[in-house]
Amino acid sequence: MLTLENVSFEVQEEKGQKEIIRNMNLTIGDHKFVVITGPNGGGKSTLAKLIAGIEKPTGGRIYFEETDITDLSITERANLGISFAFQQPVRFKGIQVLDLIRLAAKKNLSAADACQYLSEVGLCAKDYIKREVNASLSGGELKRIEIATVLARNTRMSVFDEPEAGIDLWSFQNLIQVFERMRESTDGSILIISHQERILNIADEIVVIADGRITRQGPKDEVLPELLGTASAVDACAKFYQGGDRK
Amino acid sequence: MMDRIQQRILEEVADLHEVPEGAYNIRANGQMAGRNTTANIDITSKTEASGIDIRIQPGTKHESVHIPVVLSQSGMKDMVYNDFYIGEDSDVVIVAGCGIHNCGEQDSQHDGIHRFYVGKNAKVKYVEKHYGEGDGEGKRILNPVTEVYMEEGSSMEMEMVQIKGVDSTDRKTKAELAAGAKLVVRERLMTHGNQYAVSDYVVELNGAKASADVVSRSVAKDSSYQKFDSRLVGNESCTGHTECDAIIMGDARILAIPQLEANHIDAALIHEAAIGKIAGEQIVKLMTLGLTEEEAEAQIVNGFLK
Image 1 (tube, chains in turn green, orange):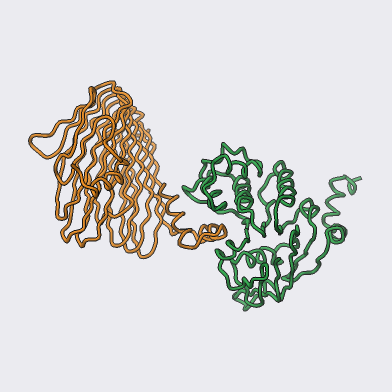
Image 2 (tube, rainbow over the protein chains, first blue to last red):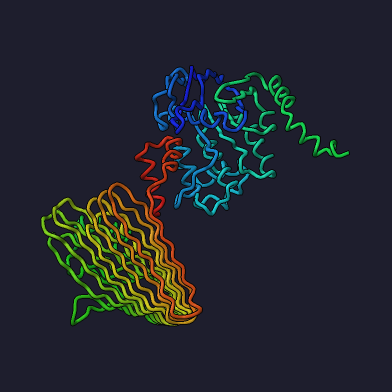
């Protein structure tokens, strides 16, 4: 469904060129639920932006359902069926939640239909539908509205950049359910960038990215135990919370 | 009596598709084109100057007055004085508006001087829309002057809208508030081409617990120029807030001058002003929803001015 072929992304810095993505090859299959993880600064968010067209690769090609989309704009990719949920959602003065969901759905949804998408992400819809997407909303509320816009688009490929960031623990459980339901209902693939074990745990496939390269890729059952096993910090924390080291 | 162009302009400025309910006075090309009065609202022509007196009886509730003005004759210069006497304890909606259609070579101009005498505990909602159209060389000019005198406990909400087609505007608004009076102003303005718009407010808070909230949201496009000058004067224990929030585009220029003057220890006054271009990430977000850059920009501007 989505293929990256030798994709590179370099930026100009004071000290010279810096490679954020290095000659990357990646295929996301049809009807797959893929989670990309890895250390901060490894290039995950950049990869998501390259797929959505927000950044253009400095080398290589990107194909979406057999179409070479490397040189296509954000708009053209969106209309071909790629959706993108921002890590830090954008605020708009004056634009209401209902307006944004209607724009996402590309039709003049009734308020009741738009409410369904909000309910889906755990927002009491009638309280939010007329609210402006501005600074009066909390980070967690904006984040859930952002996810609702992607649900409303219902496209072949949905990319989420750290959907858990800024969402409180109570809502997090609902978020997992959102993705589980989405996996059942969508006729496409879902790509999520995440650090959360519980999101990794519902993946078909896990891709680990570090230093601009894919360091591991495979089925969740193979990759997740390795990640948890080698992540000594996670292990140490687990012991700490169990009181193991303090005895 | 009115032709098609005039009827369309009437729709733009007053949302009127036909003759309104309640009291109204329609002015077209400097002449009265229709008038209706009710038991509680009387409209009479001035004898010494051009214009009308609108008298609303005390206690009049849930009635409306429409006083739209239409100019469709190129080169027309029209000046009117309209005085509103709003009786105590009344609760009314007043819709004014001016639309100019100028296809000719000469400038068309309408200067409306509106004075509101708002009685004790009266409640007024005032809506004023400005609109211009026509592809002639002649300019479309509107210079409204609004004076508001508010008695104790009265409240007035003013919605001033100028979104399209007016080449030059010099708006002056002055208000004096007695004890407990409350004034809310919401101005929405968009300028494009070489348009010029000045909006000048002076609000004097003269009575205890008077309050004013004067907020402008504007978009300046192309090579247009906007000036927003809002001055709140606190002469008693009162609260005041004024805000200018503007989007700048192209080669436009914007000058925002919020001013506060406190002449009393308990005058609590606040001003805010922000001018900036559309944030790039807002456009990117809407493009990820499938909008083109131009469509995204239009949505952001429409939302901002809504």
